[in-house]
View 1 (cartoon, helix red, strand yellow):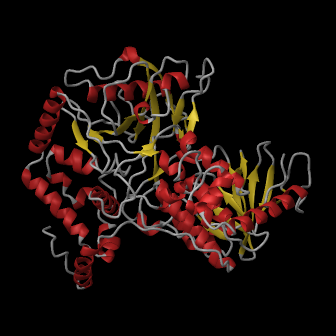
View 2 (tube, helix red, strand yellow):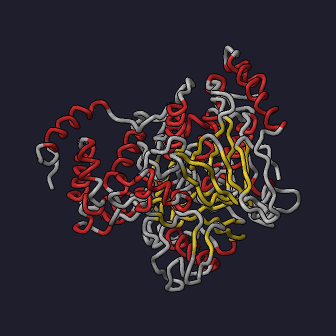
View 3 (cartoon, helix red, strand yellow):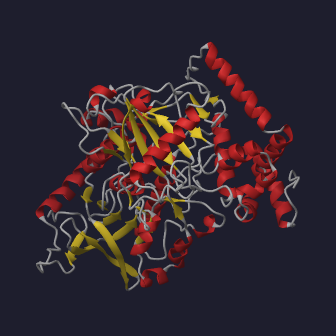
Length: 622
């Protein structure tokens, strides 16, 4: 076992009774000297090109963010997902000694993975994932980090590996699918034949007639009410109001409920419309609205990676952080964060050999998902900061990916499909067309699979057609058959055989799901959901414990949604808090909020006065 980590470890009842050396090893000392040399050298670089030339690639941001912190200040980052890697990145650039402890795989829910035993003939294994990546233009913090991760041949690092689908669709069961172009400078409109145009017009008219004009007008009014609502009304009134109630879905038509209530919550915000916070849902719709208008956007509405996530992003990120001196301990499980004398004293971890150790460092960043992190907070730590106990009120639910590998490329649109009528709230994307640098059958699997249809399953508690059981009650094979049946019901319903059973090569369900078909199924990768009141239970990145900080998509940041952007922004906030606590002179991390349209601010100020007087928003028709 390697003991050269930047954090210091003491024994915690190992089977052999081994006492671990807590003094710095020669390798650690050498690494510290190497890091100081690297930072000193980087500080002398007068431009990004010099650093990029030395490293082979790089960005201007990467050349200017390195600042020496106090010597030998160690930080243990507990968790190696997007939040943990972001925290490690920002800390390492500022000269801190960082060790990341990750129990399973770096990248967390954002990673891609290999399908076991699927490689043949020198090819890579078939690529799989917890769920497909979606990086919209409303994100700013995550793209900034991506620009600072070098990637050979890319002037803007791994950010240049983002590609923008040109359209999306609402796929209806028993009706024509509604295709929606995603206009953006540089986008080429998809080629359409006469039959494509006929289908598009049919779907548009069908949807327009399905939602009566007065219902559309009412929904527009509700959005205007929210857009002109002050922050106080949003945080209090609309946070306490379910989206379903806010848009009066009970009183509206079937299409209104499926598209504007369910379709915009279960499929996009990953929570139930009946209980989702209006503040959360409408804030995201506001951001997407301005993104589509090109206001305050980092890029197009919809962006994905141009290769499997690890190839395009996670592996280059880990390599870059390693070059900055970050040490990774994969296979190490955090069991408890121990507290005493007003500080965190250690993190009790289980190493890959099954022995427990007490890892000590100067500071600790808890960067695990909330359902795992809160299990590590004992009574003493919780008593030191009441916001930790409030995290018990945060709720998580299942949203899990399954991939179908096809021997024929299905004639689907170039973008995401939202199956708004599907009982299990499916969304999907066909991936090979978005990976121009990959020849799927030549690069992956056994050469027979030519594409991957990646599907997210958001509803796991509703019975369905094939077996009359919920997804949790089904076996893994039954889940795959049911999802495939729901996909075919939506895509093969208007005269075309889009998905063929004969073209199904194989499937892969996220291994984090276990015990399906038994009384106690589990999911190792649940997703934070946003019922009313969630906003007020989200903790801050800075805790009342001076050397303990929180990072993760559950931490309170401007984007009130469990996203990679939220994880990234919270890690930046945690690092800033740590810099304040240590008195560091290093530059603070930039934390960019969601765009706020300046022309709406006077209306929000007017609404603040009305809110304080107990009056409704001036546009609120009830």
